[in-house]
Amino acid sequence: MSSSKILVFGGGSVGAVLIYLLSKAIDISNVVVVCRSNYDSVAQNGYTIDSTVYGTGLNVKPIAVRSVKEAAHVCPNGFDYICLTTKAIHGDVSQAEMIRPAVSSRTMICLAQNGIGIEKPYRDIFPDNPIASIVVYMPCTQTAPGVVSHTNYAKFMLGTYPANSPSEHLSAVDQLTEMLNHGGATAVHEKDVQLARWMKLLVNGAYNPICALSRLRDVQFLGSSTGAHAFLRKVMSEIASIARAEGFKEVDESVVDRQLGISAGRGPPGVEPSMMADALAGSHLEIESIVGNALRIAQSRGVECPRLETIYYLAKGLDMSFEIPDALQGK
Ligand SMILES: NC(=O)C1=CN([C@@H]2O[C@H](COP(=O)(O)OP(=O)(O)OC[C@H]3O[C@@H](n4cnc5c(N)ncnc54)[C@H](OP(=O)(O)O)[C@@H]3O)[C@@H](O)[C@H]2O)C=CC1
Ligand SMILES: CC(C)(CO)C(=O)C(=O)O
Image (cartoon, rainbow, N blue to C red):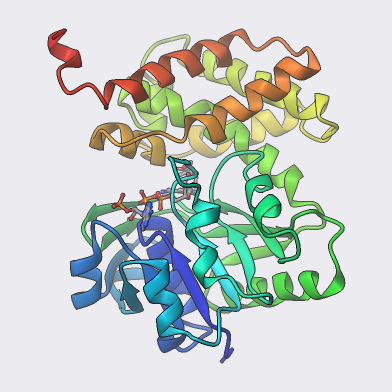
């Protein structure tokens, strides 16, 4: 068992399954989770996870706290890892600022969130801390406070940010990778995890807003009209061309086929992407980290992405509608 101390900031669906996996490699008394709306339930009962991979009715009970300050109090000698499993959405106070009370000089900040270009705010605030960027393939949804449904697989690609970090930072990523594999996940330490981020962005940049806007799961959307499959492929191809313009030449049409094949090969109704779950709950969408940042890169590189741009404006409108309770009534 590892003696690492881990703070999970954002105890929702990914946070819960991550904690379950880590609990196989680390004593659960060393895992603290910052919860918000589900605090009472998690503090009292821990998480219940129903997984098609690991089994149903799984229970894991980390130390639940309401704030980062409280977490720092619980673990006065500091954390080895802080894993951010919140949505990558920055309000008035950035999430990088929010975790500050629990960051010590040895803490590795681990971003287990979707999107591209999400690491820089952390590097700016914590110039000397090790940073791990983590790409997560793990379909899961919180169905009730503290109750999480997980399907298909749990795959993680991890790497330092930037790729050429000092050897102690690489070792810290090695250890985290090992813990996840020990817990039953498939985790790989990538030399340059940004390539894996771009490959994953083909999935999230296309499916997440399209499913949020259409209120259909991925496989349902593919079958929703004769042109839906071809349209989705074109959106993925636009994202791939941005990746190539950024220097990731490996993100070619064969990667588009592969990423599209993952969902097309699933049985109906398919997976509910996290942004669809947010849209159905009327919560803010990760539209900037998943689509906006990529579009800004496209603009600066002169890459035309008409479909992605259309999706961006529609999803931004949907996001804003959650702040206007009477939007549907036109009041
Ligand atoms: N779900 C999935 O299948 C996958 C998701 N991802 C990515 O993983 C990340 C996490 O997603 P997911 O787990 O689905 O998100 P969830 O919405 O399920 O969980 C996020 C959690 O963070 C909490 N939170 C947000 N802000 C704060 C705060 N200031 N203080 C304390 N808690 C806070 C939320 O609380 P509250 O309930 O109060 O809002 C919620 O419990 C995202 O970047 C997503 O894109 C990646 C792969 C798969
Ligand atoms: C598409 C999926 C489920 C892959 O894990 C995902 O990343 C998300 O829901 O945001």
